[in-house]
Image 1 (cartoon, rainbow, N blue to C red):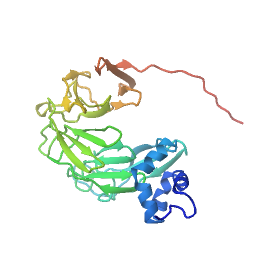
Image 2 (image 1 turned 90 degrees about the vertical axis):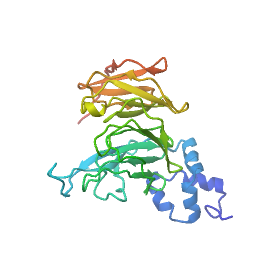
Image 3 (image 1 turned 180 degrees about the vertical axis):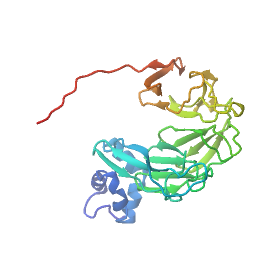
Image 4 (image 1 turned 30 degrees about the vertical axis):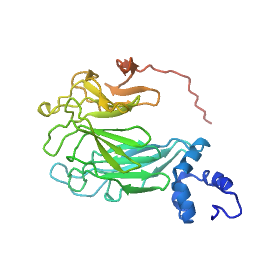
Length: 305
């Protein structure tokens, strides 16, 4: 069998390859088919992680000027792109544009992280504002996008979306092309590139927020079809292991928009409210009360000449 690096045992060659910066993967995978297969294998990624050679990067959407014309709703179509911040290198980088959307991300699309991949789901075509059922997956190992299986069912907008952080992206609620709020839910398997239907939620939820919290997909807030724009305070959680939704519970102040809710890796959910940050932890298997995030004061040092 062909060696990864001629003259070196493959184990030693892998120790060299796993130290290549992720931004160089797209270059070195073109060296040979053997290297390409190695870099795209799950085992290669696991080896990098177990060797402490992976780290967290931050993906953000940023607006930019776009000369595209738009419907009468707006004088100009806003344009957004994905940017990447590397905290270790203290450097910014722009991800390649989506294959079908060279002029910017779909408007109001949802973005979730699944392992070493970013998944972009749905949104509106920025050229004509038509809702899309498209799915695109960016792999940091290949540094390239691929088109995923299209989201089944009605073309939904303003839906809840969250990932388990590894391989599954969950979608629920939103509204269809007739502005009917939805209660249906789906799960996307990134590896298999397949969608699966989940049981319906108890309530219709348009403009709801999704977070993955403690092994459950939480759908927070939103409003029913007949209550356009009047947000409800309830939430419900889908237990991934038991494959069922839990009881509908109160979660927010009446009329509060849930869009700022985010799940941290510390077992808490955070939310901006009235210029302040509040947090909640799980209490007895359910979401606890919102509490003011404690202020942390510390000394700062400024050095100048």
